[in-house]
Length: 401
Image 1 (cartoon, rainbow, N blue to C red):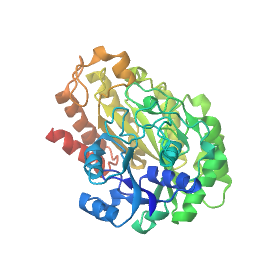
Image 2: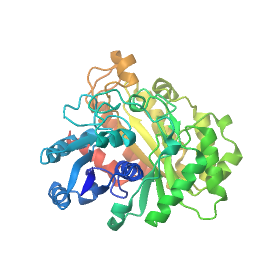
Image 3: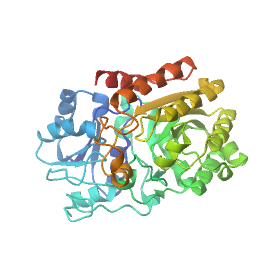
Image 4: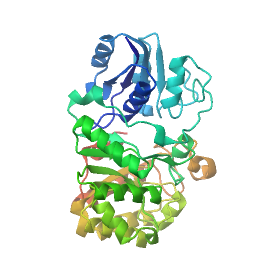
């Protein structure tokens, strides 16, 4: 009998397993609890997930809820079993079910299984961040190896050094923390040995949030003979913070792609977002990354509440400016979503009238945002940029709405 089954849910990336159950499994093993990771995202259908769960005997079923899109299926599955605990970024303090964890779950879940229900983060208690991440073991993917993944996920940090107006990461992890660069490099190779993969994706909000630790990571990876292909989310900084040596070590580290939160071609919009980099800084980074043959993904937000027609045209001009390297770039656009409890909500509530995708501002509404969103695809494809299927799926979704 397992102490707990750890279940991931559908509607996540199909090319790699969810990391949360793998991190929980490794700490539970370390603390003497038996667990099994059931890859519900791979199984896809609710019926198959239920069949897989019932093949096992267990004391607890732990359901990892990654986003709001998984809440309904999580609760449907949870109703069918007596001892269920929920966790993940899709679970809030007002979850309303008997057993749940908010915030980082490694130590909280261990304490829950010990019967200590008064530990921070459990059943509505204020969560506590883990101060020293270096004490956490590498994620354990041993239960999902047979599913044939070629790509696996890990973390080098938690939280973010930025507090972008549209983002709620600061609510989840108020304090930015990191693993030491040498430990991150070591954990990458632990995962590679266990899974036989050559591809690692970082789940960090920013892989270069701490330049000290990012330099340490790139230096360690650059000098290691075995190269792993890795990708992650990367922030544009003042160009003075990144030397040619930094770019060389990054280029020699095995980095294959960086997702860059450009969001808008308008410096005015980015300043309101708290994205403190200039177009000159952006140019410096993009050209240096391209020179090292590192692929890029442009993350763009269409229809920020202050975005005017002029601002949007500057985004189109940005795409035109980098046409010469477009074959090295994917574009991942998204229509603006206004979330509650973000800085935009707390400090600039006067800018919009509703939440979600349906808000209206002085400068745009759903109809104008949809036109701009479609224009990004039209212009981007004409210029030779790549778009993944999930981006094209978004376009169809918003058209239907």
